[in-house]
Length: 277
Image (cartoon, rainbow, N blue to C red; front, side, top):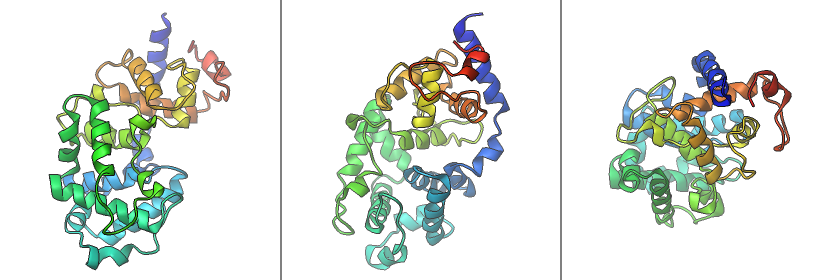
């Protein structure tokens, strides 16, 4: 049995056994799942993805506070966002690297996107044009160029919401949001139909990077955009049409205790036992 076939068999098994319903309540995707209208799902999803760093419990609290203020429709609230009327109702909300002013700036930026393009999808598709890398760069550069001086200063905390591949970032949160919007299986929504599923890039964090090195999906030591691309390209060998589905399988592989390696130079005992070489 070839190495790639062994790996595919193991990860396909983890994927099939993954508890998707249970995952929803332990993941930022919980928030867009609360809405039924596409524009609300998209808008809530984008907000939730921006805060998806650090401890899950912590970023869920701040996301919950923000969406509660917006009421039944985050899309309608933000497209009608009025600086004088709405600026003060988010006072006191902050999160880790993001001050209260940074959060207000984020919401204002989303307002500008919605007013200009009608949806976040339309904004992203203006820059995508069949190339995910260029699409992400263009989308982020446009966002970073929005004048926020009417509501806040252009701080490092505000820009932290919008890292770019040009800076070497893996763009984990953006890639996670895109997975939610494009993939049409499991807990993902499949709302954006013009981007093929196999153009998605795996949302790379330290957890996925560690497991991917253990499984020899990458030999790179940095957790950057190039590493995310390399892992995704290797996953395409297992499923050329839906490689990012293995995001769940890789998480399961680590959570199950099968992969516990801390070194980037060798395979963990669990992976060796499972026959992953």
